[in-house]
Length: 441
Image (cartoon, rainbow, N blue to C red):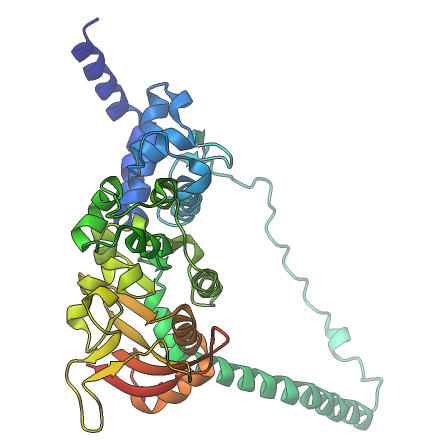
């Protein structure tokens, strides 16, 4: 049979197959419509399975064909397939629990496998039989109504008073506790910190937490050349790695193949996933190198680290007043204050040789590239500076103390920028101080 005829027959089969129809309904649902990667993963594994190619549904093939990994990459060093498969399982469970609860056919991806399993749900209408109607109550004999009361009225009244007192003694403390608990919950739900994290984590939008790309910093130090946002987004800089001077090429190859970040960034990322407002099924820790431009338009993001470690920040700098410049090849390390107010400096120079070990960090809460979502940028000149800024934004007491008078009775937290002074003690950032801020309507 000619190849063209085979492909046409297969296409017709998959389009008519109820399993394929189910996949089409799933990827059109709200939980998948804004997550192109999860939809692509689901479509790929189902299509391969329906075509009888289960042997190709392994981590290596999926990484190369769905997520664009290089041929022969090592999945042990890159968990992108496992991470997305876990999210896909959670999203499927949510679909069949909500929008797809009436589906007669279910799809699941067993843990440890990427081969989809289909199960038909029989919907039967259970009818209860043999239920007798309640018997009518027999009328109370007149003689029973006229029976004299055997207990003295005073004894009954006294017992009633005692019972009321006991009920009051029990109800009053309980009602007081409930009012206090409701008051605390209401105060917490109205706090600036709660409003911030409720904007970052949403049930109808993915949230991507992005640690700094430490591999990129080391790579640029070896090659002594900058990496543009275009090169970074396309991955072209990884295929054109070369040294202008003798260097360890095995180390370069290691930096190309592996993804490194700081422990402080990961601790902050994990702490965010444990916030009460976090939505586990829609939250992912994503390496900066694995972001796509569409992610910055569709998702909410937490970007950890400066432009030197995350070129994607360049796309948000036009919204910022406090711009952190940490590329030594371009000049001194500084925070540029684009529109200084009275009492503020136009630039804040960072001296890495300062004996006081003081530095600067910024926190910015801005719209994402489409304006429909939110982005939180936490960055400093050093790991300790970024850590101090991260602790400030995740410390409800400090954050609420500063923003409560500013936010007032607003239902949502306005976009803002903070310029912080940090102090490092043995490489650890201490509690920062706010030097300047901007609030945007």
